Figure 1: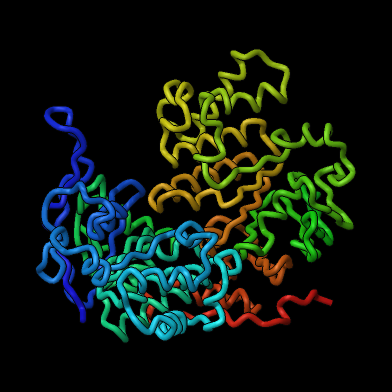
Figure 2: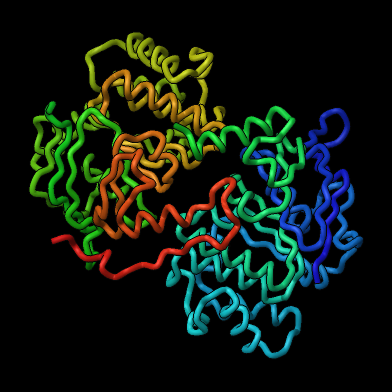
Length: 253
Length: 278
C-alpha cells in the first residue's frame, strides 16, 4: 500500500499586490511509491515548510499536491490522517509531558473509531522495538531515543502509507540515531512506506534515501540520485558547495 | 616538555541532590594543543568544561589537582575567579541565538571583555572589538558592530562569540559544541577561523563535541567519555584505530557517505564500561 506524491508549483505568498512576499516561490517534485526522498538545504531554505504543506499543517499554499493522484486539499481530514503522518524533530517537544504513552497512542484510535485498541497499541509499541510495559510510562521516564520511538509509533498506529520525517534523528546521539535509522529502514522494507525526509546530514541521505532535492531560498535547485553524493555529481553551484562541504567535513585531512 | 596549561587529576563532580557523581575521576593535562572531549549526551563532557570555569553553582567539585597555570582553581575565591573567567580562560557556547544578549549591540558585547579586564577608554575597547571582528573574517566590522544579534546570521553570531572569547587573549578556550547549531556549509568556515586563531596565538583549546568527524579534523588529541569517565585517550589521527569497544561502537554507528547500506551497528552497552579503572 505504497503511495506516490507529486507537488506542482507549490508556493506560499504573504500579503497582496506589490507588497506581496513569496516565501516559497515554486516547488515541484514527485516521489514514486515506496521511495525514500530527502529534502536537504540550509536552515531557512523551506525544507520543513514543504512537509508542513504536504501534511496540510500549513494550508495557505497555492499549487497542487497530489497523493496517489488525489489532491490532498480535497481529502477529508480523516482520510488524510490515515494516509499520511508526520514525525517531528524534537522528541522532547513533540510529546505531551502529562500524557502517558498509552494516552498518546490511544487518542488517534478513539478519533478514528478503531477497535481492538489494546491490541493495536501493543503492536505499534512492539514494532518500534519497545516493551509493552512502556505503555504506562510518561515522556520524562523515557530517553531521547525512546521518545522518538514513541513518536514513530504514534505515526504508525493509523497505518498510514506516507511518512513525513522532519529531521527525525538530528536531536539524537549517533548511537541512538543508528537505532532509529535501522528502525525506519526495517519498517520501509516490511510495509513499503513512502518516506519524505528532511535532513541536513548527507551521510544520512546516502544511507537511507534514493533521491534528494537540494533547496535554497525556498526553491529546489536540483534533484539528485544518492549516487551523486560520493563523487559530487551536482551541477548547481549551491548543491555542489553543500555536497563538497559535507564530503570535506566527513573526510578532511 | 613545556609546562602544561592545565592539569586535572581525579576530577569528581556531583550535582546538588544527585545520588551519583556526574563526573567520576577524570584526569588529563593540556599543553598548547587542541584537545577534544567526545561522548554522548549525559556523558559529563560539558560538565567538565563548566567545572573548569567553576560555573556549576550547587554542585560539589573535588579533585586531587585542578591547576590552571600557577592557579589552584578549587581554592580560588569567587572574586579571583572573576579575573580568570573571560580573561585567561573563556568559553564558546553552542548557540549564538541564545547566548548573545538580544538587546545589546554585538560590538559592545565583544568590547565589554576588554573594558572589563584592562584599563582602557571606551574608544580603545571599540577599536579592539573592531579589529577582532575583522580577525574572525566579518567583512564589514563597522556595520556589524552596531547590529543586534537578531540581525545577524547564525554563522556570523558564532564568529562574534569567538571574537568575544579571544579578545582578551586567554590561555585556554573551551568550545562547547561550537558549531552544532550551524549549517554544514558554514560550519567549516567557522571551525577554520577558530582553528587558525587558536594556533596563531598559541591558545590551548578544549573542544567539547558529540561529533567524531569534528574532533578528528580539528583536534590533536581526543578523550572519549562514557558515563562520567574517560574510557580512552587517543591521538585524533588514530581515532580509527580505537581500542575501547565504546569508541569503536560510536564510530561504527555513524552512517558514512559511500558506505554500505547495511543496517548500522548498534551499541551493545556493557556494564563493565561503567566501572572505574583500577
